Image 1 (cartoon, helix red, strand yellow):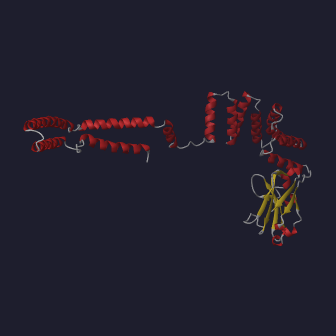
Image 2: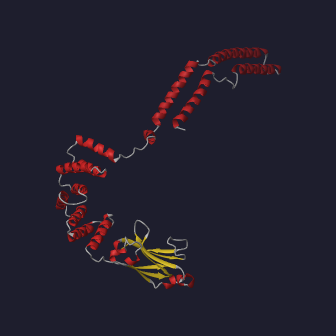
Image 3: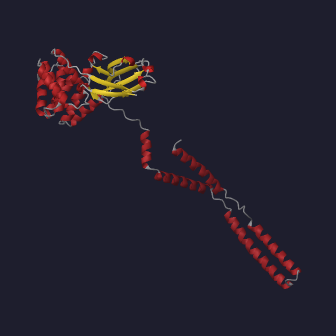
Length: 392
């Protein structure tokens, strides 16, 4: 129930009580002044009579005191009757209603004034459904409308080129990139995107204008990884594989270790080596495993020791693995490409990985209750590392 509804119920209840109180005043039920004064006068007269009978006062004093009591009683009765008559007059109904309306409006005003405006605005915002992000089509329409008013915004033209490319409007993308190029031909990111769009329109061939734009980008920034990547494609299209290899290796050195494009470049370099007939360098990971005295007992001889390499981030699937019964384990395991789980994902093609040693009674692929597992720190396969892991 809303705060306004509660407030309305309280105002209505209070108004009903106030109307009843004003239109039918409370009777004076504590005591009746008229009856009280008469009783008091009678009591004083009785006391005077007792004093006369006991000869405490004479008849003259008795008469004088009795006259004073009678006069006082008469005066008080006249005053009490007038006051009682005035106080018992009820307030008219329309005046009572006017008072109630005034108090209700005043209460509402005070409530609105004391209610924090931030709370009201927050509540109103909560009733509004969150706006959905604009679609690519809507973004394109907005960009085109904006460019009608601001045709010299080269970044907006570049964005329109990218949006058009994503919507598979290659012609529109090329037109937008050309407008951006005419306004600012020194923007490296635009040159790279423009070259990619042209290559797409040429069946992924980085020749002609695409090659020229890549060269222009490298003249502006020789260390731009995206431009170097495209330069390698240009060289490969021309059959210059050695040049492509050098360019891609340079791009690989410039990329951060955690950059997702590293895996792409590494795969390309492996494929290039295969095309050129070069032997793919094989890497290995040597793992020395030390078992505690408890695990060397006969009860563990038929347990399985699974030693494998998996990616430090991403899928938990092993890249390379060896599974050995504990009684046949010599203490050292060397993992190479021959131990790779998938032919398309060799150990030598991996970089940031971790080594896992798991002792299992069942030998199941998934870790079971009771299995003992040890995980190494992150290592680089290209370093041909040697690890020491202890299982307790």
